Image (cartoon, rainbow, N blue to C red):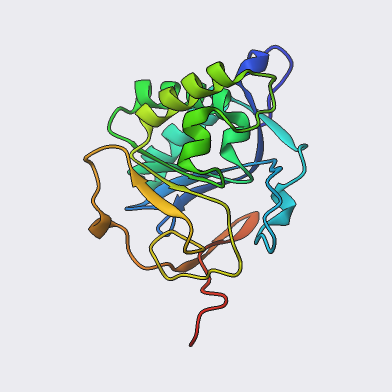
Length: 212
């Protein structure tokens, strides 16, 4: 359920677009996916413009951590993937959530999709909902990276379609931040349709623009 006043501190509350309890196309294995709300990158031809507005449901880190534990117990997930929207707009809150989940389930893996390049992240050259300076943004990214096993980074470019695993355009890169996975663990891009009692979701990587 949504956060109630006083349930979580302000710094632990996130804007959330949607949650997927189990997916097989957002990283290796069976994974929960957290789609954050809000993106200012404005990539031409973005597949999910509904995630762009900086307004939506507020979820506390404790609530989200409990949901992920439920996904582990109910769906047998092996990992969690952050998507969006743009996850790095809420990077301090992602760090808090990752720390809580890691404490509860140290065996879980973490992945992320971000439109920012690795250089932008390393330099702290990304925007956050909370006002932060570049030094803090650099340290937040370094802390989040310590939790990540993989990340797909770079703007979506609709003029550079690709069939590379987990990528939507050739300019994007897959970075491995732990020895947990190798390139061979990431299969070809696929589309997945999930039907639940109150939600139909489509996620994955349609090969738009590629020759048949």
